[in-house]
Image (cartoon, rainbow, N blue to C red; front, side):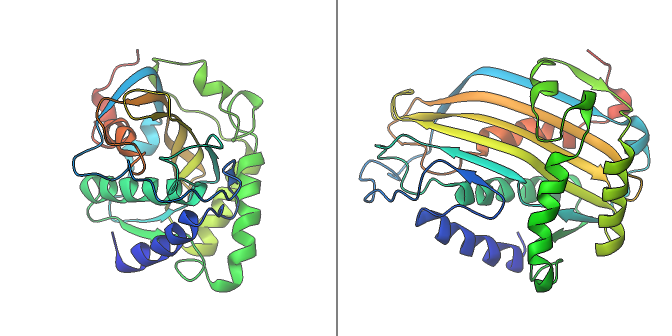
Length: 276
């Protein structure tokens, strides 16, 4: 992770640990700050059992065939983050919308480095690729993207089209509506980007009753766009329940189980995949 990327998100994480929600995100933690968790963060790894999994992915063969590994990709924070937690939760002292976004960004950055080592990644935050003067525009842009019509007439923020396709992996030249295509083109021109990595929606609900030391449920829609051409390169939907099998509570690294699921798309050759 680059130094600028790291320091920007560390600031966000520190803010998150105080119980604050980030711009454009939703959080149900209500700013509640529990006392430090004596049961969290002990030596040892967080061990999780994954159940109730749903997974879907689609890719655009044409967009993949012209993938430029030397191009600039704009790395967006999650457009919509929903962080749910019970009122009494000893393992939730560091849990918030911002902390989730930071954790996901760390996973994304690591995978991008492995999959596209020559691709230049630019963090789409004010003071980074975005000028400070564009801070309010970023919030407006997030809303415009979320409310844009996309699959089957649904808004981009609506997960219904993906939940219904559990277990499907397919090449799909999905037609991007003109309004959304123009918006992607405008972003590409404004910030000199070729690609946009966009976690559309992330919802995580903590549950102290899961497993041996608590757990959580996870839902995400993650996408990569060729903004210059206004096309979807690929999209994946991932949903699962993660329950601890160890004494270490899941008070961090919530995105770790998602990493191999996202890597599945990054590391495969679509030309050799069959729809199923």
